Image (tube, rainbow, N blue to C red; front, side, top):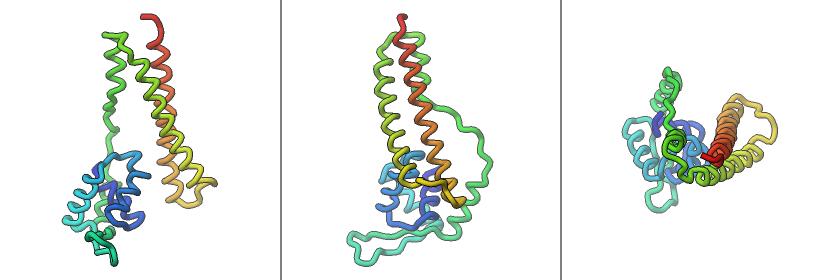
Length: 177
């Protein structure tokens, strides 16, 4: 996946200015695909040059603010990308390597770090659950809402899994060596 596809998805959902996209990114897609605001603006310029989106000046706005919208070639690219065959993603997880290293060079104090990591995952889980309560108080009715809810539920499951993993690893690490 690339940032361009995340931005095309966001623009297909709703046109917006660069700052609006960055804000929406922070509140939704950004939970699953990280990008700085600078990266977002650079990528918007790139996909505009590719003819996938167009931008028009926002009337009355200062500083040259522009509103982006997806164009038919951008929708075609998004459809092409969605239909591409996807291999299972490779796992690159620093925590797993740190746990393996702890096994051969520990004890190192990693247990305390895992308590802090679990707390951060609890915070993110609480945020996801609040979003779910706000956006999906009843079962989704449309296909679009159902897919959006499914993505959120995947985030919820991931955070719960990470909390359980950190707690189990911390308990193992607190055993005598």
